[in-house]
Length: 108
Image (cartoon, rainbow, N blue to C red; front, side, top):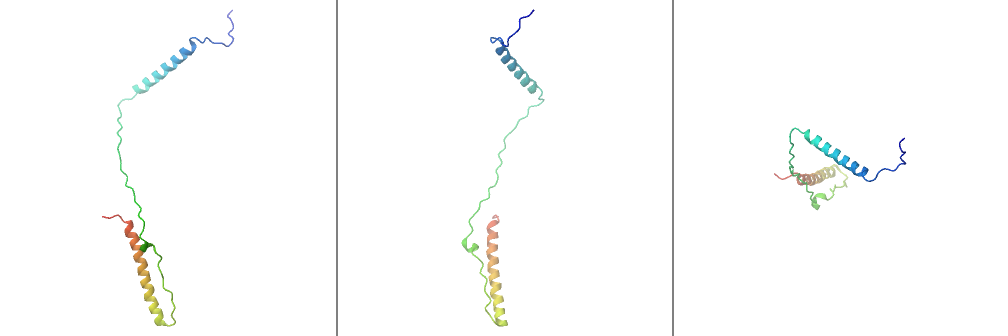
C-alpha cells in the first residue's frame, strides 16, 4: 500500500520545474509565432503636417451694431427721405458683413 499524502508538496524542485516549464512554453510560442511570418514587414513613420487655423480678433468697426434710422415723418416726402436713409444704413451694415467675410478667406 502507498502512503497517503497530507497535502504537502515537495518544495525543493516542484517550484523550479514549474518555472522552467513556463519559460520553455513561452519560448516555444515565441519561436512558433515568429516562424510563421513569410515576409518581413517594415513600418516607416511619416510625419504629416496639419494646417492650424488661426483666429484673429475682429476689428471693432466691424463688430459695432448696425444703426437703423427711425421714421419720424408725417408726409410722403418724409417717407422717401426715410427710404434713402434706410438704404444707406443697409449698405453700411452689408459692408460690415462683407469685411468680416474677407477676414475669414485665406489670402492668395
